[in-house]
Length: 254
Ligand code: NDP
Image (cartoon, rainbow, N blue to C red):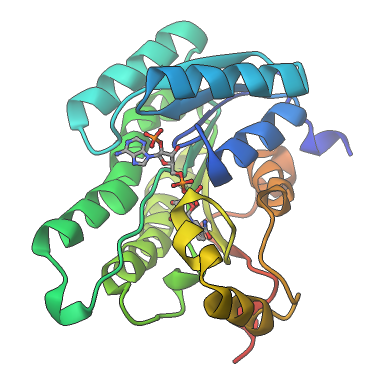
């Protein structure tokens, strides 16, 4: 269907040097978009940008900045804007995880989780918003988690940041959708990446994830491609403020 076609569009996917972000960037590139691949390390980002370009034939641009730094975000977005103009599509994906017994959870880890998982999406969205507003169009897609809705022990700060993503998405919908910008979130279930490596290696937990998921398995990062292309494309122009759970049914059952 032509309204899923992203030819001529540009996208910035934060944290796309690996894992879920890389898969989202690849899906957008396969749909025709030019994609800015992002992370903190130049070599890794350039390598991934080359891999995506070779795999999809799309134009890519390697960009590095720390999503928690207001000045680095501003400089990074300016560099991209100078190159391609304001991106048509922004995917706020960069994130991290930390686990600890709640009563021993270090304050600095709570603060870092807030900055990397939530403040980042505020900063990068705010940096691209003026250009999108001027153009009167844009798609912002925030990456939440099943933990936006379901809590588990030892990851309370992470869950709080992901719950925050749901309300950030609704708030930005209120602010930006009257200006022609749709803002939605994708909330993934459990996917095997560097972020979840310890859980994948824990045989008991890994089996629990599969049994707790109606689809009967962990997600594959490619499972997220359809959702991001849909929310980035004109096929979703009347959808905004929503969180789409791509979790094999995990949040639908107890
Ligand atoms: P990974 O650890 O594999 O990748 C994280 C990405 O974020 C990397 O590209 C990393 O780049 C980037 N990143 C981290 N911190 C910063 C920072 N301060 N500045 C810039 N970039 C940064 O994680 P996943 O792919 O698993 O996770 C991606 C997103 O999906 C996260 O928001 C996560 O919470 C969410 N998610 C993941 C799930 C899973 O099961 N894996 C489930 C639900 C949600 P680099 O290190 O190169 O700088």
